[in-house]
Image (cartoon, rainbow, N blue to C red):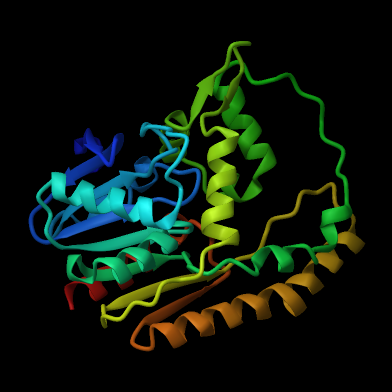
Length: 306
């Protein structure tokens, strides 16, 4: 089964409508949860690889993609309840959960709240405690550097919008494919001026940052749930506009501040999940399941079939 065979559906849960993709398959349920700003479509190439042994689905959280955009509900308790009710609607009693980035919060909180519903946990570069990260990022020497942007007209076609994303985020451009075109098409809208803009309202982003990044202390998971955690020791690609001195200062920041910080976060995660297997990917991309797809797939498959 390939990505083109998925079913796109909606469920009414917790007072809202949520979008999901179902690639089918037979066996235990495997549910993918996307990171902040992404939808179920981000897994449209990776997830179908598991359909020979699992029933594979992906859920788009509230405030993202084709799901509803309510004014409230962007806290861990509500998001976990969304997932629980989604599973109930599809008659899924128990599932393995695989979450990317921000979804690490949902994995931990769901496992702590409903351990009886979780078979296994897979964190895809999804460390779940990010409260101190902003203080670390504040030390980035490039924060005060202003790079003059090339003047360009607001994007009035989807192609112009994707071109602007590739320009602004070189890390995305490096791994761009048709998958990203499909994913992005579900996360943009055309405003009243005919300009393509991000579909996510500012209030959703602010609520998520406040509730899940600045304010979330990981809930204790009492059950010993098999856990696999991928961590990519990634390097940000800098634009050519930065000087050699600025690039060198940034490399020192990465080496002396940022890497030690994330290593401490990883150690803290291991202390809370002493039984977890942690796979560090040197030079790994944040979207490791795309950029390092085969390695992540091989590790996940072995773990899920144990």
